[in-house]
Image 1 (cartoon, rainbow, N blue to C red):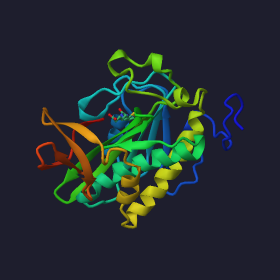
Image 2: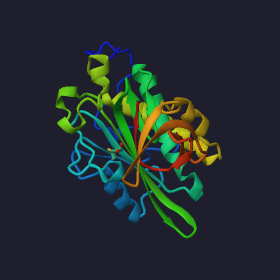
Image 3: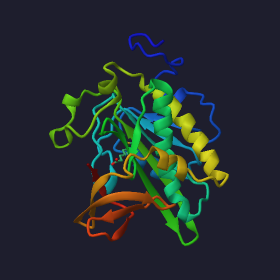
Length: 269
Ligand code: BTN
C-alpha cells in the first residue's frame, strides 16, 4: 500500500522519472525530465530534428505554453499532473496515424485502471473522461512527406492531484482529476509508469499490424449518444452511430442524413 493514499499500488518508482529503468522495449527509452518547459510537444519535436530515437519521452512538472487540440492551451498547475510527449519515428503508413491516438487513449485508460482501479472511458476523439468530465487529453502532431508519416509526437496530459476548485472558470464543471474522484492523493509516478508500459504494449501490437480500433471503440462513451458537433465553425446535431476504421465519427443528423466527422469538438448529452 502506498503510504497516505489508502490505495493498494505497486512499489513507487519515484520522481522525477529520468532515472527510471523502464522494462519497456521502445517507449520511454530514453526518458527525459524537465522541471519546467514551454511544451513537451515542442521539446520532442526539436529533439527529433536533432535525430532523437524512436521512443523518446519528455516529462515535465510545468508547461508555460502547453498545447491542446484545436489550437487551445493545455492548462495544468505545477507538479500535480501527468504531462508528457512521446516520439514515434517508426514508419507507419499515413492511414495508420490515427492508430497512435487510439493506442494512446487505450494506454491511459489501462494505466489508470491498472493502478487506481477507476473505470475511465474515452470521449471521441481522444478525451479521457470519468463521470462525464474530462480527466485528460491526447494531442497527436505529425510530420509527413511524400513517402508518408515521417514522425509523430503524441502528447498526453492527465489531471492527477488537482481540486476541481482550482480549475479555471471557463472549464470548471467540465474537468476533473483522479484525486477529486477518489477523494485522496494519487501517486503520479506509479500511474505514469503503468501508462508507459501500456503504451509500449500498444505500440508493439501496432507495429505488428494490429489495429487498436475495436478495443478503442469498446471504450468509447460517445456511440449511441446525442451529440452536437462543431464542424468548420458550424454546429450540427445528431446521434453518434459508429466510427470508421480510421476513427472518423459517423453522425446521423436530425434530418436523417449521415455525416462523417474527422475532427471537431463533440458535446454529448
Ligand atoms: C487536448 O486538448 O485534449 C489534448 C491535450 C494534450 C496536452 C498534453 S500535456 C503534455 C503535452 N505537451 C503539450 O503541450 N501538450 C500535450
